[in-house]
Length: 228
Image (tube, rainbow, N blue to C red; front, top):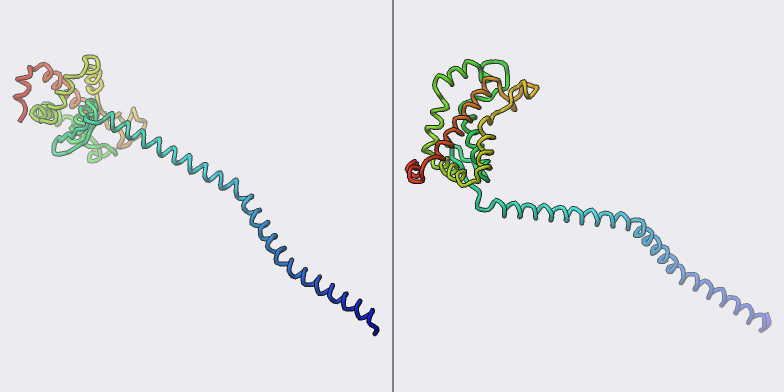
């Protein structure tokens, strides 16, 4: 082979080798670009879901913050108004004057009027139970005990400080405080009472409210003498 042909063959081989090297050198770049495009696609596809998740979390945080604010406001409103009623050995934490009197009445009703949940005598407060309740004059016994109960007297003292219209509304609402009868409820349930049970509960409520009204008429000196 002459020299010109050798030169052309060598140049062609060099070009092929260079092309091969360039191809191999660009191959990793192509793979990297493909991987980057793939990751970019995942990010773009998942971005709306991620944004939605962030918005939901923010909404929950806002709701929690709002609830916390409401709790703080409620605590401020009830600050200094919390009391513990210890009636018949049962301690009840109450807030606000109306709830105190209502809870005292409901506690006494629960003590002396058994829960009703069935037709059998042992499952309900019967007419026979009401007859015994009336014969023993249980409402009078209840208020006689309350009259010297310091917690009850504190409640009466707070009620006396109420505006007249609010005080009367409270007493009227408590006078017939009782469970609804099964007939009124439309079903036989612990949520209600027998007719006899409701009458007994209202007798207790009326007796307690009447006693409150009597105590409200006492002078401060006479009222203080009731404390033990």
